[in-house]
Length: 230
Image (tube, rainbow, N blue to C red):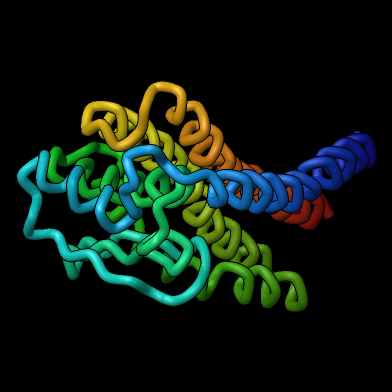
């Protein structure tokens, strides 16, 4: 029975292992496609983000350019949005979509969105768990101390939990972005279809990450269970 479980796990693991690669390729191709499509309003990513922030009376949030591609983020500690080189000064559908998504996180924070608050609370715990989970599992495996192995698995479960809590945060930010792009007149109804494609492709990477983390956790549980029975 244990052998059957292992076989089923590896079939699922191999299948899911392909998902992150596919999600990354999908994001790259979709972003590349809509980076070449200029939005009719002419707004750049920076201008779109600033307009949405002003509409929501959040002009205190800073916006600055950062190096890289798709390195866009919102820093709640500095109250600052960082927009990558492929977003900040470009007036494409991809650029304004990504910029609006980051503003979506600002809107979540201003409205005390539940999952975002939970995610913030999990960050220090997750960082601690990330640094110790696999070393504890490794020590437990080589010393045959199931207690250490179990501690490592519990710690790793926090990273898996974090990846799943991230999903509603990202989906909700994208939903807010699409509403904001439409209501502000930055994108037309026809252009919103392209924005949806960009944001859905980006969301796939988070889904892939959560699935991979879950499969890793299941694998650790199988190892622990096997050792425990032995």
